[in-house]
Figure (cartoon, rainbow over the protein chains, first blue to last red):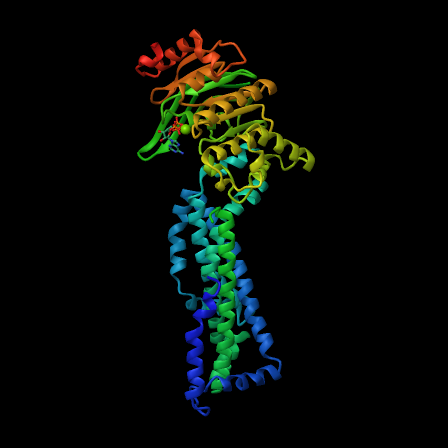
Amino acid sequence: MRGTPVRGLIPLVVLLVLWEVLGDPASPYFPPPSTWVDGVSPLVESDRLLPAIGDTSLTFVLGLFIATVLGSLVGTLVGASRPVDRALSPSLEFLRALPAASLVPVAALVLGYTAQMKLVVVVLPAMWPILLTCRSARRSLSPVLLDTPRTLGLSGWDRMTKVLTPALLPAVLLGVRVAAPLALIITLLVEIVTRVNGLGAALGAAQSSFLSAQVYGLLTIAGVLGFVVNWVVTRAETAVSRRMRGTT
Amino acid sequence: MISCDDLSVTLPGANGPVNILSGVHLRVAKGEFVSVLGTSGSGKTTLLRVLGGLQSATGGRITCDGVDIAGPPDGVVTVFQDYAHSLLPWRTVRRNVALGIEKLDKTERDSRVDEALAMVGLSERDGEYPWRLSGGMQQRVQIARALAMRPRVLLMDEPFGALDAMTKASLQDQLQQVAELTGTTVVFVTHDVEEAVYLSDRLVVLSGSPANIGLSLDVPLPRPRDQIATKERADYLELRHEVYAALGHKVGERASG
Ligand SMILES: Nc1ncnc2c1ncn2[C@@H]1O[C@H](COP(=O)(O)OP(=O)(O)OP(=O)(O)O)[C@@H](O)[C@H]1O
Ligand SMILES: [Mg+2]
């Protein structure tokens, strides 16, 4: 189990090695991996790479965090009450069907080319998986589990923190696990489209100046970022759901 | 202590609202042990939820010590039929038992938890997670959690339904002892006639649809009761007979022989 992610990367490594051996160092479209480091180094020297990674990570983390808070709150409220669910479901379905990319022009129109605009575009689509898992988890919560803290005289706050939140946590994390890669993709996409800071903006700039080695270098960095994010949320989700659901 | 007058409860059903309880009069005195009998689906759980302040009534008046019940009153603790969903799987047995008394300081809390676990015979398993325990043990954890609250009124919904005969008998006797010692009022839902007669000062039978109290019977057997001696008494057998008849059962050779 633990070796799998590393072993699973072997085909990718083989591909890169083949590319390196067979590739033409002067190719304008497919520069081999060894040139990528050189391609990215101007960004490192001019101190632009780390801030770009920082910007992307900040938008991603903050966006995912806000999406988690909003998604689990709305999901829990909607899942708790059939009438609310019936009243809100059609609107929610409509919003969910709205493609993330189509939000960019509206958000840019309202908020300009700013970090807030990026956040809004990331938060909205990333919220759905969390909202949906939370809604169904809240719906299927046993009424006895909700009665238990009441009969034991727990305050509203204690009921929420000691029973409701832990009971819904696995669902929230399951949603986060789905939402995290999505949030990262959208972060990069917004940055490429709007050129507002971050790795995506650097990628877009490199592409438009035909710095192909730099494009591949940045792509690799983005790929590693995605891999790490995915690994972390998957591990967290598995660990927590094992502990909270009480199964081995 | 607890009383309800002309209680009625209507719940939403698949084809519109269903009247589940209607015209229920019940008075439970302080320290009294009252059993509620009834066939499956007769509304026993619903009645108990109303008494515990977990379900609001559609009509009638329910009071605890003269105060109208709106929400679970202090010192009235319910033990649920569905023990599996009532224990928190992310907490150990010890921390589950402590759930209702976490406001107390640590020494007091620990001693209450120890005491409650000892009463149900689970002191050794306090560090375990509930899903590692058998169904019967899980139910005992739930009972311990209620006892740790030192309740004035204990509302128990078929608490021993999941237990084997041996454990059941021993917990019945423990419950009797605790109730007597602490003067706890108990409303005990069961569909086991022997159990109801053995434990109760009085038993009521829920019947009809919508259900109300069809039979209310005093059980004047002397206390302390004993699993063997009490169950051999002629008046015990007679009471048992009467309840079976009220429930519409045929009493076979076992009772007369
Ligand atoms: N939440 C609910 N919503 C609607 N109807 C309900 C609900 N809970 C129970 N009922 C209905 O109320 C009736 C009585 O149910 P209740 O659970 O009180 O029976 P019970 O006597 O406890 O049965 P058992 O011995 O099987 O536990 C049943 O017809 C059931 O379908
Ligand atoms: Mg029931």
